[in-house]
Length: 315
Image (tube, rainbow, N blue to C red):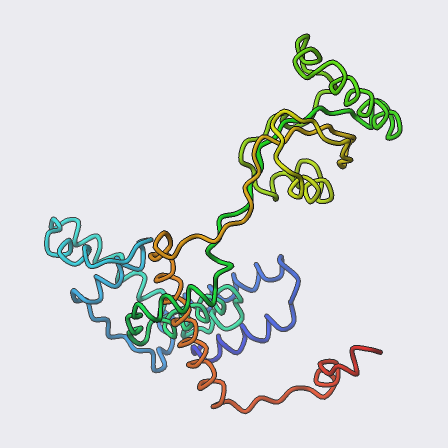
């Protein structure tokens, strides 16, 4: 059986058995049987059987298995012990051999993970094909000004709260208890009220929050209450409320409230440089794709084209 015949059978089986894992398993077994028949005497077609093993190939092979690519791997090839180097060479030959055979059998054609990996590899090449021009100080300051929202310190809040549960008292009951506690504190003073212990009900999270951003507060109390708290004034000795959360009512004492603040350029210059370089790489990749896209004749099905229009979306 020739390699082309195996490819044809694989494609036919794949089209007939989409969504059937068990059948896919059987098909793979048949494909492997045919493959072993091929390597034990079948036709080799025009598959390139020449594998070059040199320092460049081995270096690329080692680097592809590392999280961080750097030139520090280069001298390691020459410094390897003979047994270690022989193992590396055999691993490279095995991977290269298996890759070529799998590709020749068309095993990569209908695998979406492989398809995405190839697309990602091309995107990486687009972003790294050319040297990105080193940004000038003027470029950096201009980018900083145009993207000022990126370079702000997030708002944070430090506060304590007294909680009354809607599960234990009902919504109306919890609100009445919160008002009663607030009157008690205002009449007798915070020290007198808190002297015998923290009043209210047990809260699922914390009673004290230190420099927490809005997302954390919202996740514990709900978006509405978080929005209210970040609009309050700072009053370290004053209890405010009641405020309704997703689980009850709360009295709140704001210790500190830091608004969003613009970070000075000097404090974020390194991040600005990194962001600008990445933005330029994105632009280069987008331009490379546009040029590539222009080389293809794309035909969109009439029904799909109609669904893409604004008018069709209104129906």
